[in-house]
Amino acid sequence: MAKWTPKHEAPEPLEGPVVATITGGTILWFVLFLVQIPFYGWFADRDLTSWVWTCLAGAGLGLIGIWYVRKRDAAIKRHAAQRTPEGEGQST
Image 1: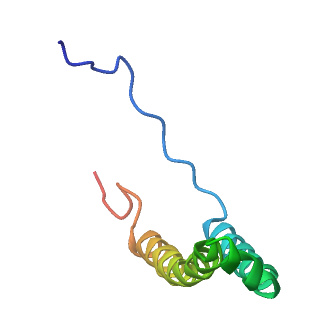
Image 2: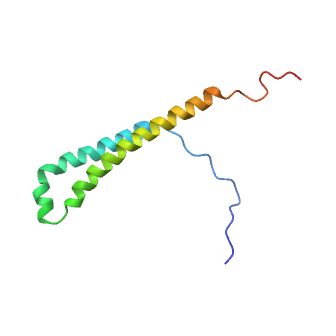
């Protein structure tokens, strides 16, 4: 079987409001956890408590994600501020 090679370059990655997206997802996971708490007995009777704990885990991992993307954005901005455009300050 021959290896497939692309005929064009990959597109640039999409950059958007990453911090807002991760924060929104984290809030959603935590709200889902809170909504399921009153029905914990129902979930326990049907052996579905993993749904409740999955939502809590999603919220916890989301907090790590918020920390990560905030640090990433700060590093990107710091790098952009330190970088000077090519050719600037050189005389020919």
